[in-house]
Image (cartoon, rainbow, N blue to C red):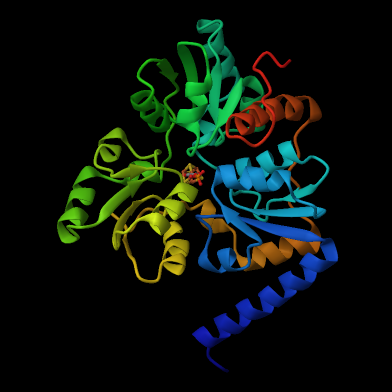
Amino acid sequence: MGHYSGADDKKYNENLKKRIEELKKERNAVIIVHNYQRDEVQDIADITGDSLGLSKAALKIDADVIVFCGVHFMAETAYILNPKKTVLLPVKEAGCPMADMITPEALRQMKKKHPGVPAVCYVNTSAAIKAESDICCTSRNAVEIVRSLKEKQVIFVPDKNLGLYVQSEVPDKEIIIWQGFCPTHIRVLPDQILAVKKLHLNAEFIAHPECNPGILRLADHVTSTGGMIEYVKKSKKKDFIIGTEMGMLYKLKKDNPGKRFFLPTDNLICANMKLTTLGWIAHSLELMVYKVQVPENIRKKAQKSVERMLAVSGEKKWVSISGT
Ligand code: 13P
Ligand code: SF4
């Protein structure tokens, strides 16, 4: 009996990549990949990016099929913006625990308690929450979105850390915050940051706004995953401490061979993001599974909240909150 080796893994992946290429042509598909995905999945991407970048990309896609390598809310957002396309999520269990921390009923109750206060939802939410909200935001544009609202009070769901970060940047508003959180980002602890800073005295610390406020206070720069890529590219520094999911390091290292990247802890991993493999992508294109769809009445309302966000971020003509 022969033994199994790393060379077999390599060959297996090469065969899968070839098969995915064939299937992409057959199905007229594009592969969209979030920055936290496995290295080998990032390698076969037509487009990689953060939630905002991928939403914008989804708007412009000509292909018939979008294979979304990320988590459910991201594929759902692509469908919300592009309902004529077939949107596939290769692993149907790939969800975002933070997105599941708020229900439409809870948001309705919050709105009832604060009549007339606009509701801003993070893109890490279900279509039903987007449909209940006035405007959506991502980690890249949350501050800009909240600032764009004329009201003094704003409801913000579901991420308490992003909400608190926005509050610190927009002190003239009162932000009423839901208490959701990302189970990956809350693992970063201040002592870990201080310890890595001690080891790399000249390193800049870049944090994702889903980290706790105590972590963000230690950061030199706070931004989305796509924002991190741009920031590092422009920075003259050589060393960076990265406060977000470890998948980020792949592209950062690839784009910046002369720079060094350090994680504060090796448990910065989003298990849901890592579920998608080359095998599941081939399976997805082979069987055309798992189709992500949203009932049309909810989709239309959710689309308004996402399009309002894109309008503020300069992507489309402004659509007012009153819907006119
Ligand atoms: P980005 O929009 O920054 O890519 O973030 C998505 C996300 O889920 C972060 O945990
Ligand atoms: Fe959700 Fe956190 Fe994973 Fe992002 S990293 S998809 S917020 S669980």
